[in-house]
Length: 112
Length: 114
Image (cartoon, rainbow over all chains, first blue to last red; front, side, top):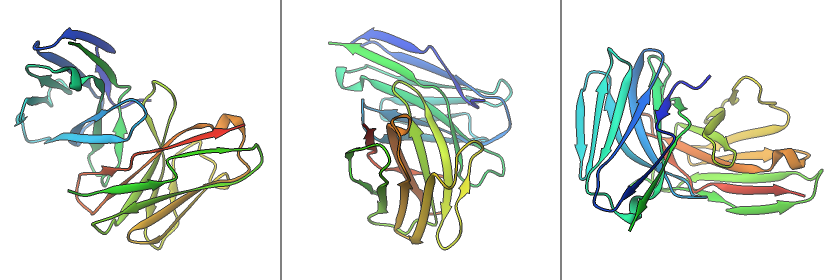
């Protein structure tokens, strides 16, 4: 079964608004990563947060991790039409040696 | 930054033929490469983990004789879909890691089997 489950499955917002996407997982992790995928393309790594970290920032991205709740959130601030894509969370389980387990993904649409 | 290429980007073949997909790490040595399959509007499903110089480790439910993986060097892994059938049509994506946590993904290969 999927390790990561994103919520919501689809999100549509206006340009300039913030987008918040959530991911929950089931078992102990080494780290959690967020990826972006434009339609029909490969994945782009956005950010990695380790199990001993609670928050990380990268430009307009902010990721949080709550290991007690086994959940993570990805916040994109001041969204742009170019942010339209699918976003996936992926976990590396403890002892899993880089192996990623992906969630189902969230489709984000940013209306200009 | 680390770049991973895949070739071809798109292939259409007849049922029963075999198709080879290459995955290359262009500016780093990849101790491990991964092969994923993705159906439309779905997540990536890991097919196998490939380590240079050793046999690939396949995920449960993935036929190793159907999907042959060769990792001949630290910069190249190949996936061969043998005797392809229409149900093998999918988007195949590889990734490579130099040994720490981050994976770098290729742009994917769209396989269509007629």
